[in-house]
Length: 238
Image (cartoon, rainbow, N blue to C red):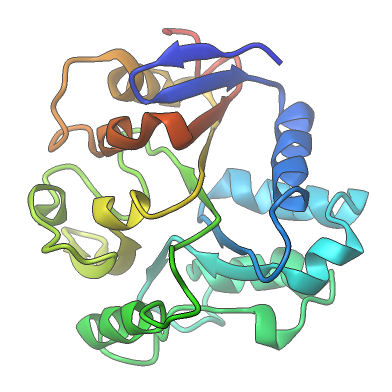
């Protein structure tokens, strides 16, 4: 599989079937024990969920040992169609019979700041020496990743937190991994699809450094651990 080397990591240009196959391969290949995977919101992850259910691409061994999270979440009940973890459950985890003990949603029943505190504390145990083994992200048309939006105060100073709450103007409160948290992940995979994402992908991977305007550029600090899986339309400007 060929790749383009960029300031924000390697970019692999694949069609949807190949992209999903590659992602499933990486999940299945995670080391033994209780590896952790953070899923993402958006239409492409939803399509991956349906594909994974239809193809059986995730092995029984994987489904019996991987612990599932989401990298960011809206402050809504899990039953909401806007819930990232709720969509992952309905679209994939339920159908594949993933045990409740392996599902780790954000505590959205609490106030945003309290939810971020509780979730962060859940990682501060001797058994957890790092964050996610694999963090799956998407890229917005505005270059946002997770819920780090353009001009988000967390970009300039996340106070060393791995996870935080942030109020996205016009979109409400979000719970999100921070740049500091991303630096503690073993690997990051960013799924990108569609021609509308092409300017953002170019800005993040090869544009002038302006992290406040293009939050995805925070991944440049950990580029050796970042893989972009992009379709031809989204990669057309690289």
